[in-house]
Image 1 (tube, one colour):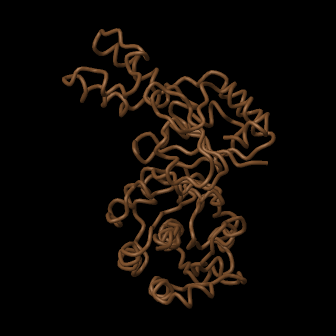
Image 2: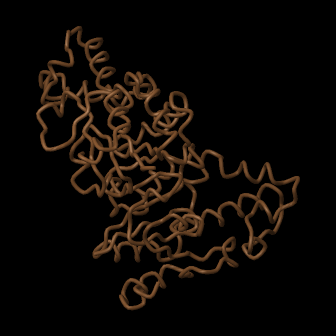
Image 3: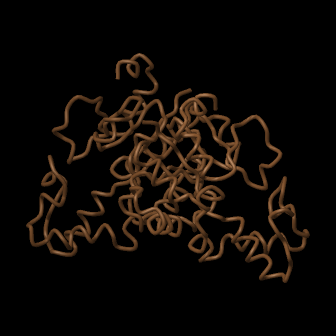
Length: 182
Length: 182
């Protein structure tokens, strides 16, 4: 049994998809994921839109609206039978998201105990064997092995084991030899 | 430099004092800390009061009202100059406390970055050298050294290094030989 720490936004929850959707709704634009490759939505939009675009993430119902990433539920349910799963999210960056993130996890991942939810900032405090995250900066001081979940903003980041979807994560943890090579 | 994880309730914040105060206000009683020794407030009050007594902790302004434990601010400010401080609170047990706990920490401990706040449940996920906590159950799977902060409910718990106040914590970390003996 391993302990697997899992990030929420861009890994379990499609925050970028919701952000792009709301941005296009506000400005009547056609922004897509491809426009964001190598940077963030902030970098991809005109400077005069940035303050309003950032504000969208802070709106009351943003985190409650997020779609579950494809196969995340099924694969985590499967992994939870053999491994210890902790949800580790940098919620301290958006404190108004606490309740929405908690409710979202209860709704979509009822098989994970709230005692295994971790709302933090600096993830070096997380003790786990693996951390699945879209932000490679969290791997720098993490004592376990980092697994980078592919996202437009990290497309050009190198030096980490990269997975592109939850099926790849399922395969990785099914094959201990592959996992040891991470 | 060590990493010190610090619990909130009964260690940084006087949750029991506020709970007793509100209980006495509600029922016109004279409950004191001494009545609670060896158990919790729940155990110390008549069965017919328990549901209402428990509800007091869930009231909107409970966590915002808590007093800072004597010397906690000064000692943590001192320790933060030489050590890495993380605040690790089992907030998942009272989800409605998230925002109040966050605001309380910002107000009373502005020298600790919110990136070092950890709202969790099972503290075995915390990677630190020391954990100062009033609940010895958190030490069972903790990989560092547990330091038990004295509280009425843990008065009969044995087998751990016990501190009675923040001055003792300051002395402990000032004397590396004492600390190594923990």
